[in-house]
Image 1 (tube, rainbow, N blue to C red):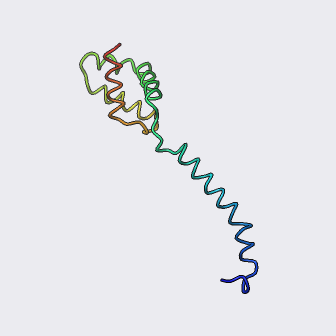
Image 2: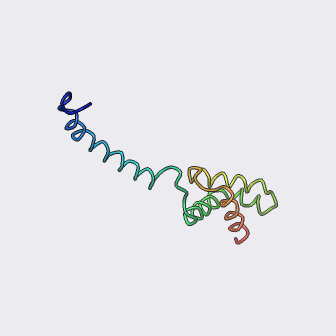
Image 3: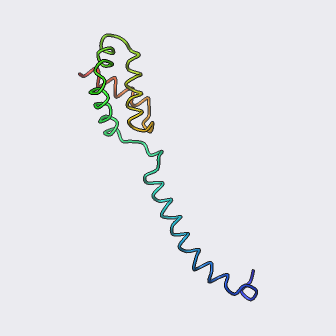
Length: 102
């Protein structure tokens, strides 16, 4: 396509292409910054662990009584609270540590 056969093609591209390009770039920035794959920070995970312990006293009592299966239940509760974005291995380690402390 050259300008002589389609005189409006360049101005049409500038008029409609630039705003679309800006919207795409801004959208990508927001997706990268706040995307669903964004892992929660350790502090956020610890907050959810404390909440899971408070909300599930029976599972905590079962764990302390030697039922290690209840730890998996608590890990599942934390994973649900974080939208499955947390690393389950990290959640397991932090949860075990927290349960051994208190």
